[in-house]
Image (cartoon, rainbow, N blue to C red; front, top):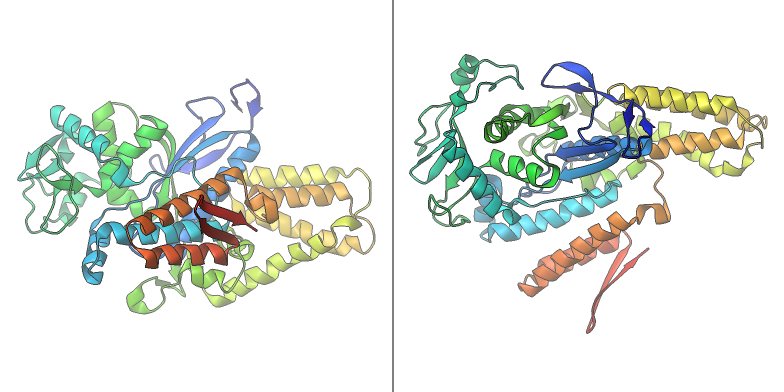
Length: 465
């Protein structure tokens, strides 16, 4: 058993650790507090179903930990400077910062519609450039990195554990390594910590000239700033294990000499009708598109019906089946007051069964199967007057643990209110810079989800319905 800061015992949770390739007990470094970092989006386009799976899985896991009594410090970054953003800006002939701002706002709105709790911290890369430069300088001073014609590279062979996370030997990695045109690194294995900027690209002044951060560096710096040098959990998609997380681990442990992450938690990839989702295949499904078809609870049910580590295939038939399944829960909601007033020990048994599944590598399919069996029982017994109100209460409580059934005021928590304020501030930033098209777009999107924004001489007023 774990314990909170008051010494109260907390239920043990076990999660599959990608590094050790086995299920391990979660043992937070700080009693009763879980420090968790999730790799967030690169904001160059609208959010798709792959993003949605990540958001729902880790939002549900966080809510579950909080229900057990853990305090969760949850960090999800925003990558707002990257090759993809720069390329989109060039295509559309506008500043990269404007592209990033537009899709950051859209991402926040999509997560709000999905019912995702806002992170404890949601740092942007461009707000952390000074810390990133210090991080790179220290790696150079320790002999783990070197400068080459304005670029700075990490010396992979100097870090002894490289390849352990992805289960690869250096020889295997080297066989697939390549040197991009213009790169002047000493070893094909080495990766960029800092990139020299090209003409027309965003840049920051640094000891190595004008440049910008490498993709992997940002997460090491921001996770350490908000969570410390060792994280309880680092999460993301399986496609990030290599090279992104492998490189994060190498550079962080090289700098601190400490273990970077205790548990690496990765979710499986999402396909569409058996194929990898891609715009070129015309099977690219956005969050907005799917939420125009089904409500957030149905979509969450669809996502969590597959174990987070398994691949998930999206098709209309499976989504429709999820809708029919969750409709049973809605039918019970209509009859909320029809249970009888009596003690029912089966409610305790149901709660124990569901929590046991969730504590064992966050097995949401089994937890949901238990809840659906209970739903069938409730629907059968309600007509006989044999279901206790206590059982129904526990039934709905267990759904809410995973983020279902957020209604009315429950959606407007202080943190969600803060998210709306962030979006409004981004809108005001767009207005101040003369980008009235984006400003109007943000207001329209907020209005669609029941948030009215009005401008007055005294400032901006927010109404939430």
